[in-house]
Length: 244
Image (cartoon, rainbow, N blue to C red; front, side, top):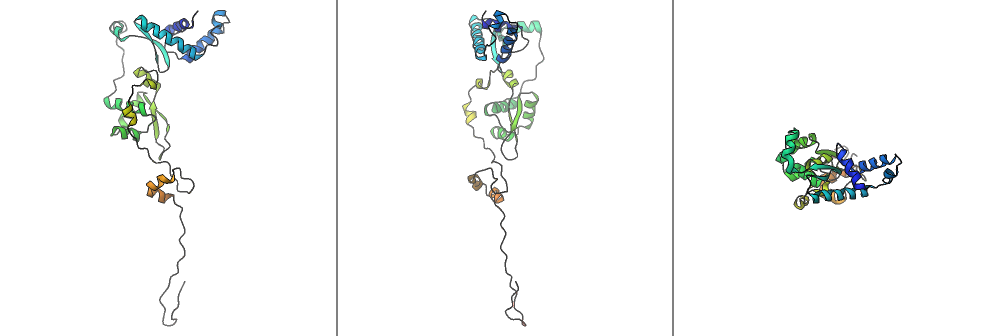
């Protein structure tokens, strides 16, 4: 029995897309029956599973079947070809779908996808407009998520795309994004690093402090001024007297 046919039946029977790790777990669970047939696939590795899946995908594509095997967001599943959509709609009816993304939302999503992780201010530098409303929509739709805080002044939140983003656009991973060299080359100015008022704790190099005089002045230690001597005019009784 060949590995690719075992994977084929697993994917046909599954109610969702399966990752190579999940398929490997299924092979290992079946091997617990201690039969000669199932035991042969006990130690199957993920690269072997991926190779078998890609072989199956090439076979279905060459055979011109009404369905194909695809990898979306790292998981594999059988999907029907768009050419057969009218008959499928007649059978199962129209399913309620979320409204389409607006043009501003698509633009913002593209910027994040190609340049992630990014803060809101960095996204606004590229778009040239505020993205507060658009970001809220993308977060609610689960296409974008917070990925941690940036190491800059104020520690703003970084954002990146989610696995649902890959599923929404039918991508295997981010490497499948169409080339957009112009978008990647667009410069984005990042804020200076964190500054402290205590000497020896500044987190930016001296060259950056020279470009920001105000920040440099704040980082300088406070020096005590020397005591001054104040002279008072001499009186008639004590000519030339001084007071310190």
